[in-house]
Amino acid sequence: MTTRTKLSKEDFLKRLKANTAQSKTSSATYLPKFKEGETRLRILPSVGDMEPAMFWSIVGKHYNLPGGNAEICRDITTMGEYPCPICEIQRELYRGSDEEKDLAGQIYASRKIYFNVVARPNGDPKSYEGPYVMEAGKTIADGLFALFENSEYGYIADPTYERVTDGDQQFEEGGIDVIINRSGTGRLDTRYEVNPARYGSPLAPSEEAINEILEKARDLTPYVMTGDPEVDREKSADALIVVETYEHLLQKYSMIGDSVEEPEPEPEVEETVVEDAAKNEIQERLRARRRRS
Image (cartoon, rainbow, N blue to C red):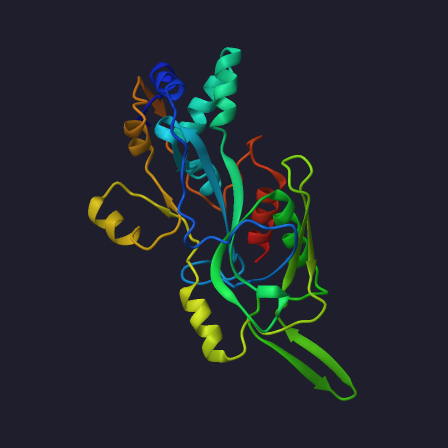
C-alpha cells in the first residue's frame, strides 16, 4: 500500500471562485488556427523518442484553474497510467451543488491530438512553412485517422515520394498531403472536413530540406516529472509536453487534505487498458493501433 494526499475540495473551490485571470499558452511553435476555406498540410513522421507507428500524442489539458492557469492532465496524457488530482477534484465538484457542477465543467480536461506538420502556403505542394505542432480536435483527428487506416493511401507521413515502374505498370510510393476544409465561423456552425491531396509529393524538394524539417520537429513524447530536481531539469528542458507530479499539483493549488491509502499497482503483463467513461473513441482507437504495431 502507498499513501498519497487527498484533495481538499473546500480550499480549491475557494480559489477557483476567485479566479479572474485568463490562461495563456505560448503559440510560438503551434500551427495557427484554421481559417475558412482549405488549408493544405503535411503530417510528419515520428522523431526523437516517439514510437515509429505513433507519430502523434494524446494530450489532455485543464483550463480555467485558479490563477487563470492551464495544466496538462496526468490521466489523459499518460493514457491512465498516472492519477490526476485535478480530475479527482473535478469529479468531486460534479457531485456537489449546481454552482460546483458549473465550475467542474469549466476545468474539465479537453483532449487534443498533437501532430508535427508543415503548412503549404497557398496550397502549393512544393512550398512549406514550419514545422509546427498541430492541436487537432476530435473531428479533425477522426478524419486523419481514417486516412491513416485506409490502405489506399499507404503511409501518408512518409517524407519521401517516387513513382515506381514495374513492367507496364506505374505505382506511387511515399507520402501525401492532407487538405483540411473549414466552413463556418461561429462556435456552433463551424465544420471541418479532412481529405487527401489528389497526388502524392515529397515533404520538401530535396533530401537536405527534408532532414532539416525533421530535425526541427518536436519530440511529442510526454515527459513525466519524477520529483528528482536534477533529472527533471535535464530531461524536461526540451520537452514540449511536461506532465507534473501529483504532489506538485497538490501544492500549487493548495489541494492538501487528508491522506488516503492506495493499493500498489500489479505488474503489467501487457499495455494497460483503462476503463474510464471519460476516455473517448479516439483514445480507444489509438490503443488498438498501438497494440497492432
